[in-house]
Image 1 (cartoon, one colour):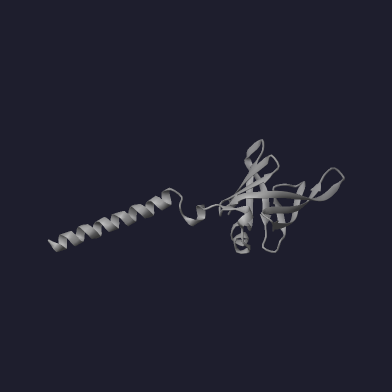
Image 2 (spheres, one colour):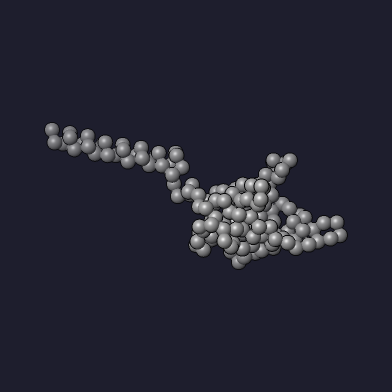
Amino acid sequence: MKKILIRVIMFTVFITVTIGLVGMYKFNVLQDDIYIEGSSLTIEEQNTYLLGSWIEPIPGNEKEFQGFILNDDGTAESINMATLQYQKWQFKDGKLILTAKSIGNKTSSVGEEIYTIISVNKKYLYLKNGDLQLVYKKSE
């Protein structure tokens, strides 16, 4: 009788743990799906979450993508944008500051784009500049 009771208890514990783990995966409770507010990013989290390639669909051509690459040395690169060449980036006070060279017809200028980081995780970056809100996806 004791052996049966022990087996029932062990089976119940096993099922409970299994359901809990599957639920964490299914309902996105894993670490990769936790969003961090931009203003609370630490230096370590900046490296974990911000570095890499970020893309968004090109407005009017949803099959193509554009974006930027944030390198660990502070340089930045454009993705699929010939007339806007990102040169460097920095993170300050919850803001992503991108320095870019804009190339037009026989003219060029260098300026900064400043975005408030609404939130970020390992897959998505939510930015805001005035009324403009952008969602970038991490590209592998």
